Image 1 (cartoon, rainbow, N blue to C red):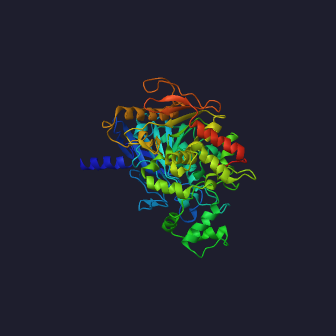
Image 2 (image 1 turned 90 degrees about the vertical axis):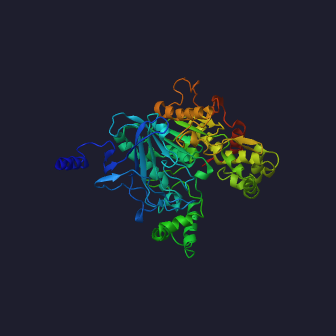
Image 3 (image 1 turned 45 degrees about the vertical axis):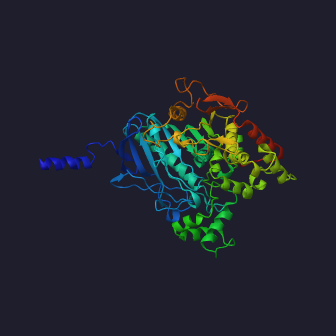
Length: 538
């Protein structure tokens, strides 16, 4: 009997008896976990920490991602891997070796189900963040029979430092994203997913990343739909100006003897010798790392202004679902004194016109006053609520609407505004004459934060189901409202440049026209009257 038991164990180890959690990839075998969703107890399979590219260390630092090497044996993909180095919160859970992805599937690996796939790109201003398995568990999507993928990509100086030439071309983080999407295209069938039904999605910098992928030729054919939440590539923060200045500034902060007189080749050589933790720690002083427009070269991610690319229809024309929270910057009102200092010390009209390219002879101060007058005839210091509306528009909202409006000329665009002020995040902020839903407060209505929803009002649960349904319907059917039912009593029309339809997600969602109509149109008029194309952001 002992001999027979030994033989059975050996055969199992050798894979004669299949294991539902073992998947054979081109580079080697992996083993994941089996779990159940909190809400409805649906079985799912998870694989955490699958390497999709070679570790970007040593001479691969600041380089585009490279293929991962094969491994022997069975790689255990059951635990969270380290995130890429952060700029805001350095910790022991971070590493330069961070290019790993997670796959979650509601069917047994190897299934021929060919389920839709949703690939999440995390936000964090391109300087912090990580794959979703932490608090943002993907179970709501798994219960809708969606395969979910998330991945790490380089951020901060490791992902977006650039010398403004080809020595360190930049956009390593965006290229990591693209590399991960290629992995999904080639391998997701092994997890029951359909490579022809991939939807990319992301919030904040993740939403900007989604639209950057739309603008890159290298991403053609890697997805059939896109969802961008609360950001776009036209947001001012999502474009790094004067990247060489930042790169040299970083080097000088590490070693004051390093000067601008030294070449970019010497800069690269210097940074390759610096310990990764030192770069991360010094990068803490710089919050300027974000995508750049690269000089033309083989392998470049993007080489032309983003605004002009989408305006001229030179992008991957797939259906797009895009939107924002009703008052993105209102969360700052939680600390009125801090916001007061921001208004009094940081308001500078020139900072608000980074890419308007003012026509010759136009006074920036005049245009700055006209911008302020959109929101108040007095000063922002006297009307903090108005300054929040200005900041919401300037940081996120107008660039989101602009991208949608321009893209709608060439592809199907569906638009939303998340306005529901519920109890799940206690997001009913109201102060200084302004109220609404702040940045990222919609996320807890999308991802699984809670094991039990019984303590929340029915309206919160219904809104969660509506929001999830909007996204998963889009991934499945390429329209967010394919048919009327208990949740969807209407059909959301496509947005067009003439009729800018959107769904306002309130307690009782309804279709409206022209999001943020007054302020958005005023911004468009200012760009047309005082700006000189081509524009980069908006």
